Amino acid sequence: MFGIGTQELIIILVIVLIIFGVGKLPSIGTGLGQAIKNFKKASSESEIDVTPQKEKLESTPSKPQEPGKKA
Image (cartoon, rainbow, N blue to C red; front, side, top):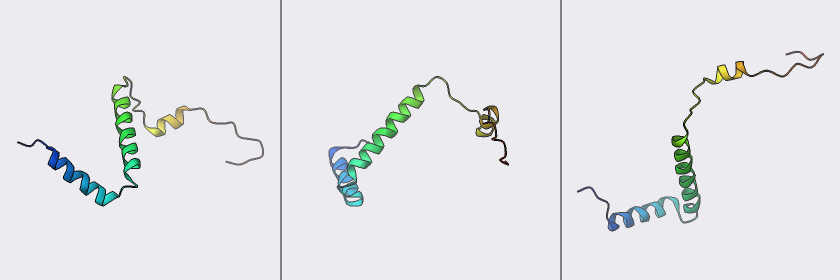
């Protein structure tokens, strides 16, 4: 009932070509491919770091301050 046939795909492709133009299609395809690749990589990782950014900064050792310089 809600399947997308070849006619619908052709219409969608024509609309995309009109909106973005032929020159932008390779960059759109590259960006979409990288997004899918990153999503698959992130979903397959077993460990996810959920530490808030503030705690990460506090737990990392800071560089020693050079003598004569104020903070």
